[in-house]
Length: 198
Image (cartoon, rainbow, N blue to C red; front, top):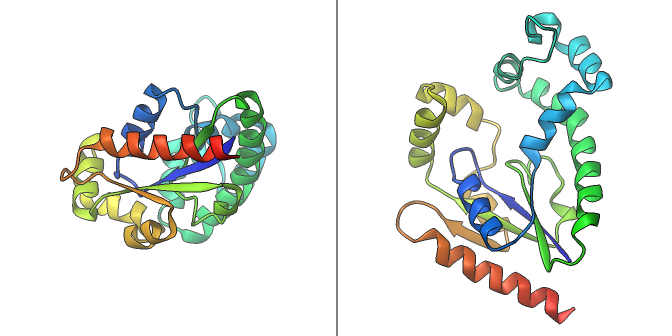
């Protein structure tokens, strides 16, 4: 079974692409989504509170993801610190999750910062969803109801699209010039064939 990382910058359309892979029967682990469950972990909560204070708590005493995001997306050091807490837990969870899908030719982990977080080495292949910055900004503004500056602030700590594309084994272009499904199908067939050769 191949471990495949699927990445792409904010607004690139990773969710759409992973939905298509899921339709083809590929198990998908959503790292960003899964990391949220660790915010309820007492150890993580204590660490976050010691770093950022009670400003990141909701009125019910839970971690306020929006407040936390506002802090870390405006402070690179804070973002790196948060990542250093969550990423090891996500990786361990992912490896455990992989064990339940041994009969599949390959599985996918969807994560925005595979290269930035230094975990690219755990994957056998990497797929990058590519999209021009201008299109991505429009998509995120519409999706999250925020202004362009807020989107740009989130993008500050992401590697450039072209660099990610250059480091990846496969690139899916999601800029409206090529249909997505044929691109995904082609990669699906290639990855399935690689597994059969082993």
